[in-house]
Amino acid sequence: MGTKTVDEAVDANGTEAKSDKETVDGTGTGTEETPDSAAVTGAETDAEAEAEEQDDTEADAPADEDVPAAGEKDAPGVGQGAAAVVSAGLGIVSLTGSWVATVAAARETLVGQLQTSSSASVATQVKEVYGDAWATTALVGGLFALAALIVGVVVLARPAFGAPGKPQAAWIKSVAWAGVSLGVVGLVLAVAKYSDILLGLPSTK
Image (cartoon, rainbow, N blue to C red; front, top):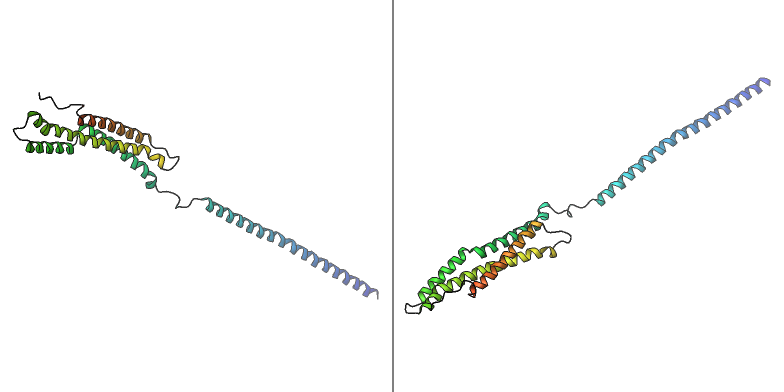
């Protein structure tokens, strides 16, 4: 009986020890699984955060369609600069003359010679042969001056109808103003010559 009691006690203790061991093993297993789950959860959280940050970056980045090409940016400035140079050139031509004015004056001289008889008065001959040719030259010069004036004014007024906050280059303004000034001077001189205020016909009396 005593031996059985001791064995039973030993078995009971062993069973309890085994139970405790299983309990410890169960707890240990749970403890080991907890860090792994936390690591997986943390990795998923980091991945989601990176994905959200990438989406925000892509949303903030401007689209390729909204970014104008280099040629499109330079096109307005190039066009205005070319127009300003044309205005200045037309103003110079109005003052110095052109082949158009030369041909027109020569034609008018030829027409005057053909239409004027040799028996006509000196005043009539001078007017038909020389006066009309000079007036034609002044008229052509005035047209060039008027064109220079119009082109220069359009260039100077162009920024008011373009993109706001985009100033016009200083050299474009300078050349355009030069064209306007030359156009005004050429137009005044042309009107003065056409009306015989400046360099009128000589007296034939």
